[in-house]
Length: 477
Image (cartoon, rainbow, N blue to C red; front, top):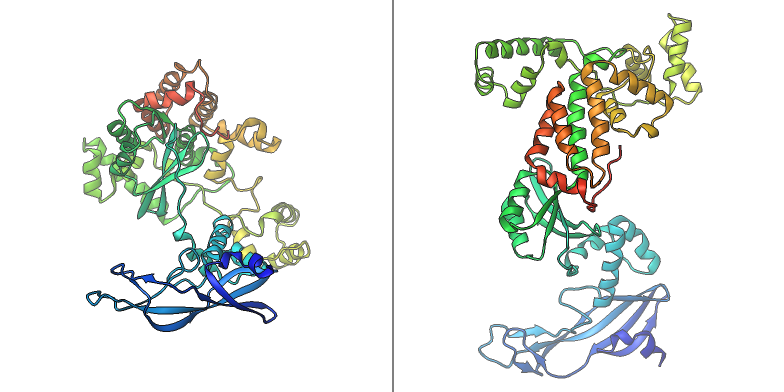
């Protein structure tokens, strides 16, 4: 009775004996007799050609591994015209062809790997009495049957890179619940159009600002309401703001030395060449052909009224010296001629783990002599995009100086704040997007103007989430 209870999942076999070897429990069993159908022609047969033994693993008992030693038959087909003369009998529901684990053990491993992934599950499986490496655990996932999900009321559409600049895919989620619905290979309009046409129940589609996806929705579901995702609206403004901040580095980089050298001279020469051709009436595309430059590069040079506007603040990465910047600055102010070796010994007493070369490079770049820590274009953009109440006092002062550095930065700060208030759903919003777009026309901010022009071209989809409580993410600023 105990054997029948503990090993009830092996009822398809005849258990002949159980052996306890310490760390492993070995169960000797054999298949039940009877006729077996040929997998090729379906003819039942009882003729035994030979016997062989399989040793699959089963679910653990008492935290110990269970190993089955199953004596199985190789059968001979009775049909003379069958292309398969012999075959091995299988035990449906318990053992599958070529498997080294029983079906129930495989499903347990698969469920665990699905929740924890490869490395974590490989660490936990031995604790449960299951031996499986990381690669073996991951190989169980492709056989997982995906659940059938109902057609969502509001599907959300976006693309992502499998390999950047090479392979892309389209992900579809339920915008109400946030659950993933499907992943499509590719990101073109035909892929999405085919998926939408097989789901006619969709009435609202939440998407990014892609014109390709917009056309796909119009082709597949002409009556569906298109809604621009508010996260992508904010993300698009953030990208435009980052380009404007970078373009005005000469205005707000008060203490940071601008990049100078051969690249700066080459930039000035190219700026002169581009503007020289433009003054002669040459078009942007023709300028690119004559100078062997890309069209976007020519546009960037054409937007700059002076070559100095193309100079950039150096892009410094955080280093191990940064926590000791204030001390180094104070020591160099007290004793301008202090040797670097002496400074190295002093900050090592405070816990500096870096090398002397790193300290030499940090000091030679002048980063310790600045009144404040180095401000990169990315961090400057972050100050503009952050909620005012989330800024510390020192950050607020730095933001004020950044915004007051030139009229363009002042206008950019105002446009960002207005858009942050506009992006919250409100029934009084229908007229506000148009007002905000018209405001960008008077500002000397070409990248923000380009973003606003895209909003105007996608007006209906942009207006929908601003006037209805659509299920999308709130902006962080």
